[in-house]
Length: 290
Ligand SMILES: NC(=O)c1ccc[n+]([C@@H]2O[C@H](COP(=O)([O-])OP(=O)(O)OC[C@H]3O[C@@H](n4cnc5c(N)ncnc54)[C@H](OP(=O)(O)O)[C@@H]3O)[C@@H](O)[C@H]2O)c1
Image (cartoon, rainbow, N blue to C red; front, top):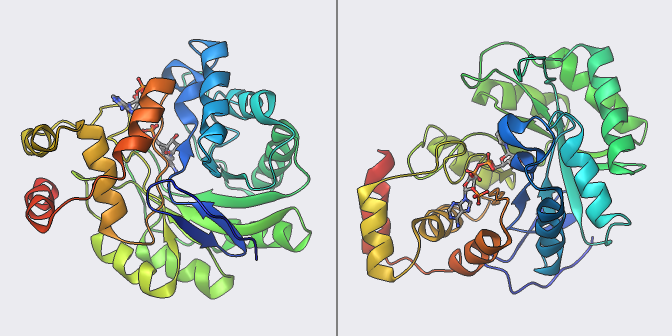
C-alpha cells in the first residue's frame, strides 16, 4: 500500500491500495463550453492541471466523454509522464452525440472500446479506477447493472483496470455491484443543497467505501443560498470554501472533486476547504438541503 503525507485539507483516503488526497480535482469543464471541445483557453487549462499537481493533489476525475477526448488529452499534455502519486479516475458508460447530449453506451462492446480509448488518450497501460456511469441526465434510474458491470470486471481481470466504482447509481445497484465484485467508490450528485444520498453516505462510510460527490459546488448552476452566504460572510470566507469545508466535515469517506478552469479559484478552494465549521454553523448549513 502506498503512503502519502499531505497538508491539503481533509488529509488522505485509501481507494483499494491507492492513497489519494481527499481534496481532488474534477476536470470535466476544462473541455470547454457544454463539455464539448475546444477548451475556452487551452494554455489556461494546462496551467490549472499543472497547479493541481503543484498543490499536491493526487486525485483527478475525468472521462473520455468529456470533450469528447479533450479533457483526457489536456491531462496527458499537461502532466504526462505522471507523478507516481497521481491517480486519474475515469468513467465509462456514456458517450456524446452531435448535440452535446450524453446517450448511454453500456453494451459490452461500448465499454471495452471506452476503456481502451481512455487508456490511449491518457497514455496509460492500466486505469487506476473506472466508474461505471449509470442512469441518465435526470439522475439514477432503476435496473440491473449486471451485464455492464461484469464486462468491467472482465477487463479488470485482464489487468486493464485496477479498481472499480459506480456513478449515478441507486442503492440497489450499488448492492448489486458489490455482490459481483468489490467497489472502492460511489460517485453521485450531492452537495450542500442536494442531499438525496445522506443515508447512503453513512452506510458507505461504515463499509470503508468512498463517496465522491459530483457537482460539489452546484455544477453548471453554482450554489447560491442566503444561509450559505451569511455563514461565509461571518467567517470572512467565500461561499465555495464553506461548501467544500462542509463536505469534508460531513463524513470522512467524502472525497472532493470540485471543478474550476481558473488557477485563482483552485487556490482559493484549496485554502478555503480547510475552514473549521462550528456545530452552530454546521446546523445552520444543514438546514439548506433539508
Ligand atoms: N459522474 C457523473 O455523472 C458526473 C457528472 C458531472 C460531473 N462529474 C465530475 O464532477 C466534477 C465536478 O463537477 P463540475 O466541475 O461540473 O461542478 P462543480 O465542481 O460543482 O462546480 C464547478 C463550477 O464552480 C465554479 N467555481 C469553482 N470554484 C469557484 C470559486 N472559488 N469561485 C467561484 N466559482 C467557482 C467553476 O467556475 P470557474 O471555472 O470559473 O472556476 C465551475 O463553473 C467534474 O469535473 C466531473 O469530473 C461527474
